[in-house]
Image (cartoon, rainbow, N blue to C red; front, side, top):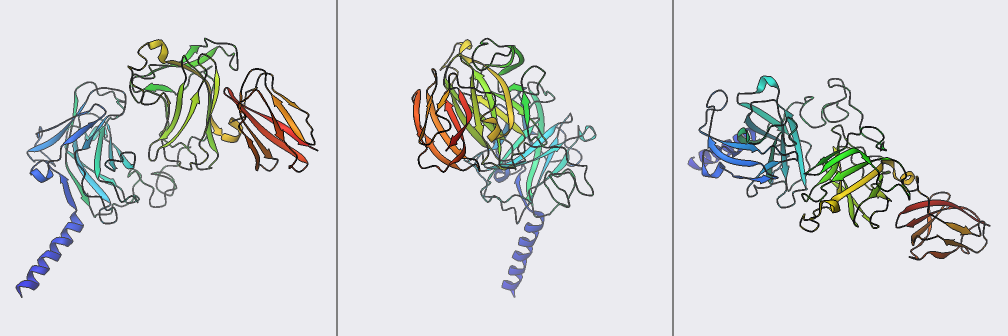
Length: 449
């Protein structure tokens, strides 16, 4: 009888655990007093609860200190938890106290693979300030099985701005088996929504996602410098010859002041790569050769890098994102020499790059747009045997030949000023060739007789 009673108690406790969940952090016992480390330059401390009233009368809480910087800064739990099981506990709860309307980001990620993550946001309203409130974060659509760390952002992007030393408080982080009813603010697509928190019969219509843009810097742009870099979208072009004779360009200064110094475009309604044919192009000029990286960041990161090779010469770079199909990322970031130490090039003049004709659209059209190779000749055309291809002074890096249906039929990497393309095995008809030099790519039509 005692064994049956004990078993019943254990089953009841297990049932209560599944219903109520598990406290991860409450700062009342050693086992639930997880410290937090800095992500960026935020500060953390365990302190005495400054407002022991209302929803939270406990003695101790966590304190988040903002340093006022413009880059995303947060705090991350020190040491991994057990991997979170979203089928058993899809909801996370946390109490917070803030003195101003502020966006809070609750992120779960893998330790050590921090890029494997998912986040849910909550905007605290003016009526919720100066008191303890409990927030609920819905992760029912999460499929990962290796998330084991909590990351918190209070006004992570410093959009208010909060200012140096501004403090926010949090407590009682727990995971719960309770499945929250769909709302238009829960940060996931559920109910009859057609995207996250929009569309359907209840939520507001979905705002348009970003599918293309073209910035020529003759007018104001939404681009900005971030992570210590500064950006001027009305700079004067310092090299008017070559492929870019236009007067107005963009200029990014301090490209290596931090590892993540960047030119960014924040678009919170989503960058749409879902058609599988997207890409970026931009003209670049700078004082030294380096790698230029474009990242599309947010829910899942995509990254493509292209080399800028000829200092003080405008060069067109093309970034192929056609293998990616996400539509929930919210930021486009351009890095010049990503993760480069500032001591490597201490002269500020070495860290100023100009950009122009920054375009997002169908990649196939970007790679051949607005670029002509000086002195490019193709002879004979039409041909029955081969084409002789040459340039005036640009080394031909690669030649790709496509059928009129878009099938690639030849690829060459001559690395010379002139070369021959054998057409003897090709059927008569029209072909398209993409000829790439260190400055860009030009498309020409070929005819085989």
